[in-house]
Structures are given as C-alpha cells and as structure tokens.
Length: 176
Image 1 (cartoon, rainbow, N blue to C red):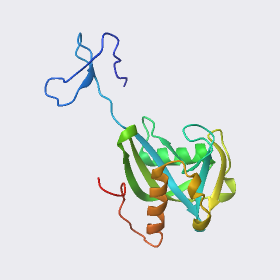
Image 2 (tube, rainbow, N blue to C red):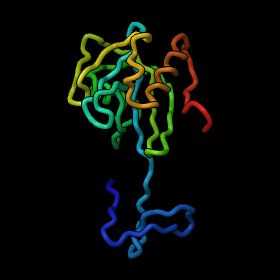
Image 3 (cartoon, rainbow, N blue to C red):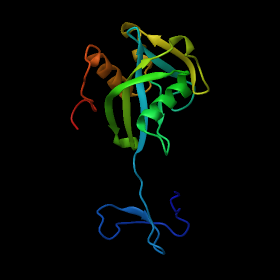
Image 4 (cartoon, rainbow, N blue to C red):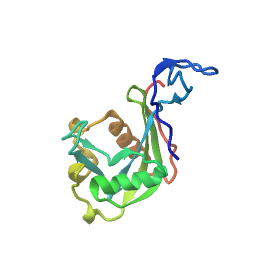
C-alpha cells in the first residue's frame, strides 16, 4: 500500500476535527501526518560482555553504540532488531524480551531496545555501518565514547536486569 504524496500546494493548518497543525493540501484535503520514527536494537551479550559497534556513518561516526537502526515497513520490532544486529555487527541473536522503550521527542524517535544473547561471538565483525565491533566487559565499556544518551540508559537497564528471568521494560530516566 502506498501513501499518496502531496503534489499540489502545501500549507500548515489544523484540519477539521484535529488539534494540531498538519501539512495539508488545500486543493484535495490530503493530510501528511508526520510521526516519530521507530528505532529497534538490542543490548546483546555473551559471557557477561556486551556487543558494541563503532559507528562508521554519521551521526556520531567514530563513537560506540548498540546495534540498532530504523524499523522497516513490513517488519516486526523483533525482526528489525535481528536485522540491525546482522547489518551492523554480523551478529545473530536470541532475543529475550524488551529491555526498554525510550522516547527521544526532540528528534522524533521512539527506540525499542531488546535484551539479547549473542549466538555466535566468533562470527561478529565490522560492516559498512560499523568500523569495529567488540564485546566489552562492564568495566571496559568506553563510556566517554558512547554515541547517544539512550545507549547509556539501555546499558544500565541491561545491567539492572542481569540476574532476572523477568524484568519490566524501562523508559527514559528522570521526569517524563
């Protein structure tokens, strides 16, 4: 299914029955809803160490992150998290459940991060998206070179869930 594109004049207006300004076509009435993008990823571990990827692409090229990226149309969140791990680290995963859902409103993203087990640590390696991948013990994580605040949040939530067979999904730290 394709969504019609705005081809005529575009204005920001509040459509009838709505409460927010939307990009609309005054000729045909089409409304282009702008919604947050969904990012999926994982904190994948093996032997108490976590998988991190050094970004080869912007934003934040050269900094470490979790294997994560945008969810594609037609994918479940789980499928997307597994695909991103393969694309960024050549990693195959067993997902254990949702670790956290983080809302990054200022950039229009919702991040769904899973807790996962790395199935074949010998197979991981760099890709076009990651110049380096590695497994880090907690005390060896390059904290000052982490790409995004949400990576810090997810790593800390992973550590909090280590000894649990069930854990509640967490969200952004601090006030909502």
